[in-house]
Length: 489
Ligand code: C2O
Ligand code: CU
Image (cartoon, rainbow, N blue to C red; front, top):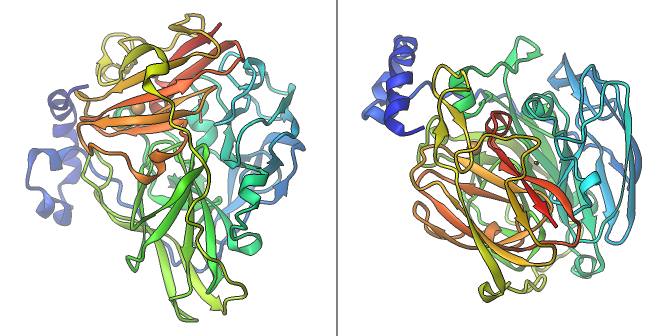
């Protein structure tokens, strides 16, 4: 939807709701400030040790089920999981291995697993058509043929993806290979999976109940969880640490930084290692994206604390208006090893634009009216189309290279666009931030488009033929229909 209409539809009711909040009213200077209430984040005490989900190999049994778990300190919440604890196991495999994961569906509804970022045969990819019923099971058997990196897995039943992920179904999937092993990156206790998700609670219950407006903006929670628990701290040594970050939120974008302003090093993104480390003081991470970071704790004294925070960013709808802490690091031990940041990490061969056989455009700026019933506000679409499971929207040739452009120039919502079945390179960003951020200099499967931005991506399709999807990874948008089928032939 265009900004004007949104103000018209959201302005009056939210203004009424804001009366009484003098802090907020004082901060209102422009019309844009009046767009809705920003779901202020509530921070906790950061006094609970971080939980690391257990590791599993590529041969593992998962059970999607309802359990109760301690997301909030000392309180039990009923949630969904792939095991008997919070979130799925961190599945770790070595490139070349064959994965054999059996999912037993003990939910009362359909589900499946999409292996986000992995390039897989159609029947293993977890397309929304390939869901299976309550009490059913499915064996995901596939070879892992791609480079080391931080991938993840989550359900993909159309219309229910956001809720199932929000309720707890997600896990990290790590691929290792010999190239990465030769770098001797921080490992063991110094390698920390950091799965960031915002949640909304009603008392101790998870509350997933997006309104029509929240389907437009994305459902934003007030509490930030890491690895399934609220407000944790990690005890660290004065060594270098590797943080494997995954934004597993349905809609919230984080502008990640360290609370003392210290710089850190981006070594990888969605599709594994960058060519060289990129030293930054902040990095944006959209839903579905990963960032592989190295942080040197040697300059912090024993007893010192530092937070992983999200800083404000230009306000788009309700996002980016508040800075908040996500988790705390407590430096409690002396360095036990030494590490030198390598000058080079890997080789990334740029796909030449001359090899592209076709350029496709995807207009993601417009919503279409009529059918949706979201208070007459229309529904999210791509090229004016709402997802239809049976319709093939684009057909590409296996093994060929194409340029895909996502255009949000005229839009006023944030859209992290994800393509199944392929890893791409980002050629350029036009409008808005104009340039690529550190993580976008490597292989990607999800790309963030702020309002007013357009990106050009280049990708070579694999030899796996079949039907795959591309969609917005704002999961409320995805469930609302912001998804298309493309077929590799
Ligand atoms: Cu992580 Cu089709 O999504
Ligand atoms: Cu979107």
